[in-house]
Length: 243
Image: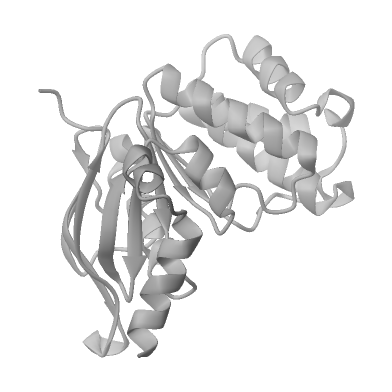
């Protein structure tokens, strides 16, 4: 069996000299073509885990591998194989939408870049914003540009942290279609979002984090067979913790 595009083995992340444990001994894989929903209440450890997967934060203990490459501070090949779309879009205000995409294409060595840039702009209804400066874009438009940059090089691993943030209904529809298309071409997709209906509809499998640990996991069929929802499971976990 080939190496999964996303592998997390006994990963722990601590802060403040080890006094704060944000992620506690987590292990899981995401296979090629699989969409996995990473869910949990605020403070569960989702964003910390995604930032470690993206190589932004170093792990305290354990191992993360992207496309078979161990994630380390200088792991170029691991980073080239992934895309991370953060919950807050970060763009260069003095660059246009097209210049962001061209820069991304050059960074990742994308071939046939002009046609691919045109395609992602069309997919997210950004053709008329092609030459607009990032500083002139709305919050939702900036998020769309970040998503386009993430999809442009057809990553092996796609990491999404609140990808619907700021998107209008058309943007949410296009985002769902883009995630499904990425999985269909073989990408491993990991989504973190508080939009439970969106996550439950798209994901093949779920990992529920609570207090930095894996509280539960299962498939969409498991959830639906229990005649419940992800939101109900999260609420019960929170109430059990409080009691």
